[in-house]
Image (cartoon, rainbow, N blue to C red; front, top):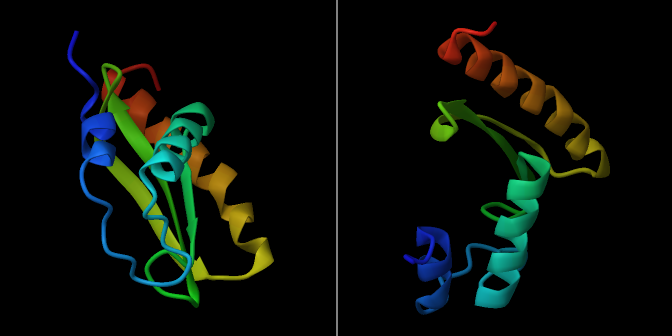
Length: 101
């Protein structure tokens, strides 16, 4: 059985950190990816810029990711409030692509 690409990529040398908040430890990256799969979205506070939080949710077609919806907001404690809204929007696009919405 083939290993998922994300697992293979996490096994390579750690990526360069953009900020002090950028995760670079392979085990931490695997935990983050597992949480993203479980929750259906990603929230990346300060990963690329200390003052910004990136939030993304996948758009699926026949169960495979074909696009993503994302926003970049200020890196404040309330940033995560956008996550459920982005998941709803991505799910709406997914249903339209699959012809069920």
